[in-house]
Amino acid sequence: MGNLIFPNESNLFDSQGEFLEKISDIQGAKKSYRNALKAIESQKSKLDKKTYEEKYSYYRENLERLKN
Image 1 (tube, rainbow, N blue to C red):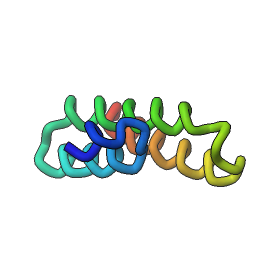
Image 2 (image 1 turned 90 degrees about the vertical axis):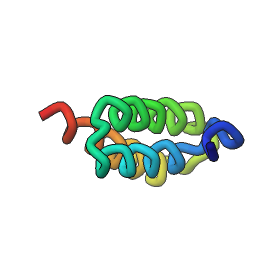
Image 3 (image 1 turned 120 degrees about the horizontal axis):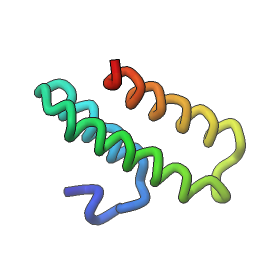
Image 4 (image 1 turned 180 degrees about the vertical axis):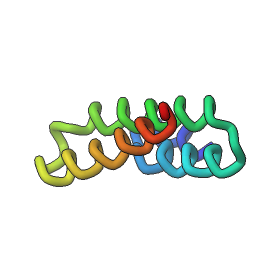
């Protein structure tokens, strides 16, 4: 719901992915983590380099964990 109001808020997608992962909706979690990556990429020019890289790496790790 929150990501409908704030479609570029990557943390909302990440939190949604974590929730879906905990309830074993792996496909939904993957989608949410991909959306978190898209959202953070759209915000790249507004973030300092360190913040962007840390967030991008964290979201990427979440998605990669589910591929195994």
